Amino acid sequence: MKIKLVFILVLGIFSLKSFGQTKIIAQKFHSKIDISINNNLFTSYIFSEDEKYPFFFPVNGPSNSSVTSMRNGNYPHHSSLFFGCDKVNGGNYWQEGLERGQIISLRADIIESGADKVVIEDECIWRRPNANAPIKDFRKITITAPSKELFQIDFDISMEMLMDVQIEKTNHSLFSGRMDADLAVINGGTMINANGDKGEKETFGKKSSWIDFYGKRGDKIEGMAIFQHPSNEWYPSPWFTRDYGFFSPTPMYWPQNDKETSLKKGQTIKLKYRVLVHSGDVVSAKIAEQFEKYKSE
Image 1 (tube, rainbow, N blue to C red):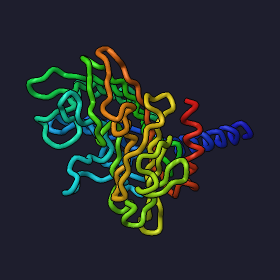
Image 2 (tube, one colour):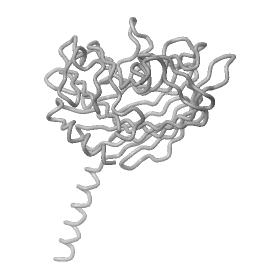
Image 3 (cartoon, rainbow, N blue to C red):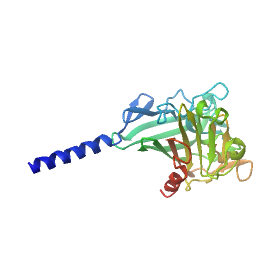
Image 4 (tube, rainbow, N blue to C red):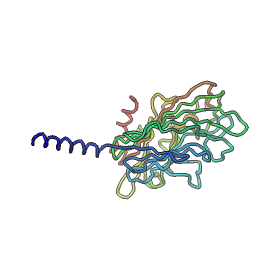
C-alpha cells in the first residue's frame, strides 16, 4: 500500500512538472518559419524573395498582440524587427525598391525545435542587379521563454565582406525595431535607455547598451527591449530613435571619421543582439538585471 502511494505521489509530481514545462516549436511554411510558445504564435521569421530582407513579424507579447508594427504609409521600409543597411557600395539594403539591393536568404533551416528553445540558421547574400555581392552573412536565431511574461530572441550574425566595402554615413544601419503605434511615445508609451534617458530628444545619438520601449494596452503594460552585446564591433553604438516607435543601435550614422565606414575584403564582423518581449515596465521586467546576465554570456 505504501509503495503504491509513493508511486502515485511521484507520478503526480512528474505530471505537474511536465505540464509546467515550456514547449517551443518551429514550423516551416514555404518562405516563413512560425515559432509558437506553448501553442501560441510568438513570431514568424519571414524570408520571401519578394521581400527586401528577412524579418520577424508579428512579435507577439504576453497579451498575444504584436509589440511591433509593419510598414505604415510614412515609413514603408520599417518591417517590424529586422537587419539591413543603406548606402553599401552604392546599393540600398534597407529601403523599399528591390532593384536597389536585397538581402536574400539562401537557406533558412530549423536546427532545434520542440523542447525549451528553437534554433534557426540562415545564410544570406546581399545582392543587386548588375553588381557583385558585397556581403554574405550567416545568422543564428535562438528563441526561448524564460517565463510566461518574458520571451527572448537572440540574434547572432556574422557578416563576411566579399570585397572592399564602403558604407556612406547613413541613419539606416543594422538591427532595428519598429514598435506598434499603441506603444509609441507619441501615444503615451515610454522609451528609456540604460542611463535613464527617456524619449527621442534624450536618447537620440546617445551611446547605450540597451533601450526598452513599452506602453499600456488596456490595463496591462508590455514592450520590447533591444540589447547590444559588449563583444560587438562599435559597442556601444549610438541609437537612432524616434518617438513614433523606431529604435536602432546605428553605428554608421556616427562613423569615426564622420564620413564613411570602410571594411576590407575578407573581413568578418560579428554582432550579437538580444530582444526581450516582456510584460510590465523597465523596472518590473528587470531589464537592467537581464542585461547584466546577457553581457556575461
